[in-house]
Structures are given as C-alpha cells and as structure tokens.
Image 1 (tube, rainbow, N blue to C red):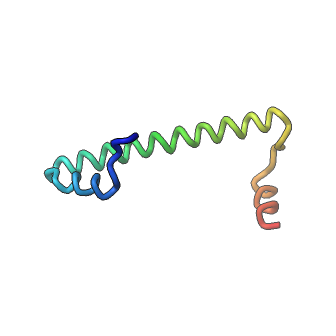
Image 2 (tube, rainbow, N blue to C red):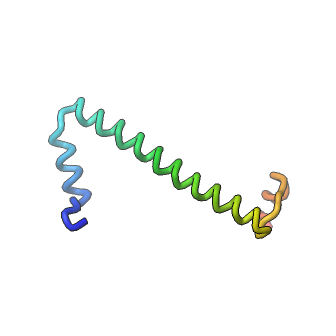
Image 3 (tube, rainbow, N blue to C red):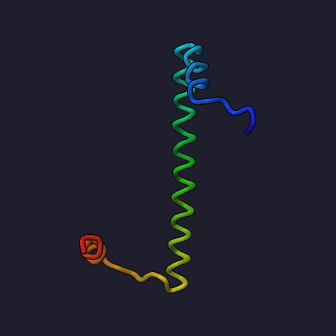
Amino acid sequence: MENALSFADVLEAAEQLSLEEQESLLELLQRRLIERRRAVLAKEIEAARQEFREGKTRAMTPSEIIAEALA
C-alpha cells in the first residue's frame, strides 16, 4: 500500500463531502466494521472448536468459568 492515505488525509477528504455523503460514508463504514468483527469472531469460534476437538479445552458451566476467572 504505497499510496495509502494517512488518517488525517482521510478525515480531511471526508470533511469535503456533503452532509448526505458523510452520512452515507458513516453508514458504509459501520456496516464494514460489523462485517470485519463478525469475521474475526467466526475465526475465534472455529479456533476454539478446534482446540476442543483436539482435547486442549473442556466443557465448563458458566459458574465454573467465573470461578476460574476469579481464581
């Protein structure tokens, strides 16, 4: 990404947009962030399931999880 814009450049460019364009940009960025978070969560879930299949973790009740976290 040799031509990557700095955060300040992106912010300045966004300020040049109309109010409606800024609102659309905000909505688009929020949807993309949700999608990225969902993808990260899906990877973490799959990794946890794989660890469970390999016997690296065990099933626990919520009470057991809390007790272990507080120990």
